[in-house]
Image 1 (cartoon, rainbow, N blue to C red):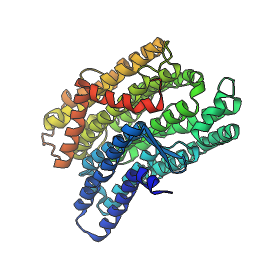
Image 2: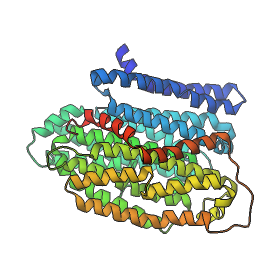
Image 3: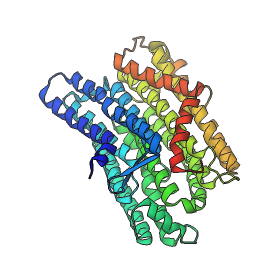
Image 4: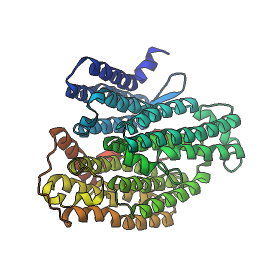
Length: 492
């Protein structure tokens, strides 16, 4: 490994080093609040490295390294910045919650940072073995975080996540083996050339089987139907800040590597994958929304909502594969990235509002939120606004995200898929607005005001304003996403 390789890995090295520093600091100080402060401020180092690399990529386009297993381009750097932003808000928003595991604060923050290291690597990897290692670096800390409360439900959540993650990793690895056996290489570029020479639908039966197995493995990470069985129990049992982290950062990293694999290594047969992603999109949207309607627990409701939103994002993937009549990728690639950014802001706002409200009730039941509109008007307003954004009502980030994705489907001659997405969005209003009704219409005997710390209020403000800003001014983020996908899909 050369000095240039170390330079390219600087954001990941800084993240891993920060995680180690947090653990050491936790051992030598009794001021536990200092640990979270260092974890938050330390994110400045990987942020600066990422921005410096972005400036260098502006000149060179893409910077390969580490024996050809990694490339630093705007696509990879976009996801690094998204993950860093999510980690910062999670650390801020969990300030009150971590008092439940006061003795293990250092370990909590370190595991978040270690998993973030894997996520930032995932978007930049261009080789199957490196992808698998990065995926495991992401998943194993998340399994420990899910079990962090150490009670019955949390332990069950961690165990389910670990076992099903191992199963999905096995499917993914077997799919990689089949593709490697056909192409004779684990490099995505070499696989793309071998598939292009195949001259058959899907390249060959081996590529078809390998692609399906890899889609199944990645499907677990992004909570896509029918690989979503772990989501409701893990979301309910895990600490709520971990649930928020899982719902956005893990999903963003999963879609990053899915895009990299299927539309780089298998770009020549992308049309063959369009129907598969379209069907999975419809199933994920429909199953997620229908099951969410019957939920009484707000975390389980958002868990099924996450499945539905994986389906919305898959609309963009199907549109990328189908291409527009003129042969370009249309709005699909940048729409997927924009939606991931908008969804991150929206879901973080929703989850941290729920943390603030349920800390008083001690229950995650929807009915426990009754009367919160009067007891905590600001926090309730943020939660209601986030839920409106998840439906896709203007002027929110969720509306703009769905507008770009469904527009991409229409331009790719997949009008039927856009219609299904719109109908699912309308159906989702039933359970999202039910929570809003409980907040403002249902009454509660208690009139005690709900107080939150400065850190949690700041996290709510950042995420809530992000939802509003992206709804009113989507242009800046859309410009960034368009620049990010040019390297991945030159036709975009």
